[in-house]
Amino acid sequence: MKKITMCFVGAMTVLSLAACTPTAPKETPTQPIETAETKDGKAEKVPDPNAPELDLVSIYSGNDDATGLVMNMEGIEELDAQHIVDLLISAGVLEEGTVVNSFEVAGGEKAGPGVEVSEGDSGERIGTLDLSKVPSSGTSGEMVILGSIGNTFIESFELDKLKLLVNGENYSSGHIEHGDDDYLTFITNYEKF
Image 1 (tube, rainbow, N blue to C red):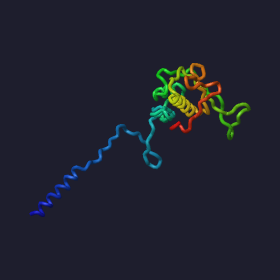
Image 2: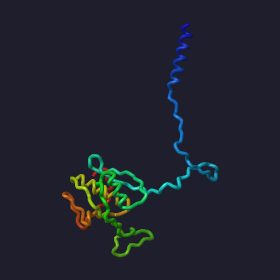
Image 3: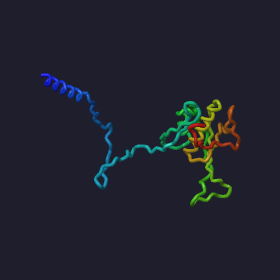
Image 4: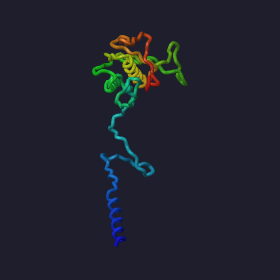
């Protein structure tokens, strides 16, 4: 009788464990995926022809302790200076209401195979960005703001350096003052200054 009881208890334990085992949820697609058949009979995904084409840009902003920058990728429909400034506003680098007064790129392509640089042209692509305002901050905060603006614009528009103006004047604050020959350059080791 003990053997029958033990077998019965064992069988009940196995069944109860099987009943408690989680089952994989059924996957149901939220949207039907358009597919097309290839020459070899395999199905492949077809992109939505109505989806907007996006340019990917890197937006730089300060890290938590203002000792460096972090980079986030964003998609934008049109690569222009005001869209980039709007993303910098969203990232907390610039203040709400900051407007691009002007943005110009001067200089040409770098010398290389098939590209000749004319005499007197250094081949550098130099951007000049004139903003309506740039927030003031302490020295480390200012380094974050300038580094964020510089890295974002230099990478987005493939520049060698960037001249920053505020309402037509060289950038100036209580801590950093730019002259006519001062430019922002890309900070390669941006994670830590």
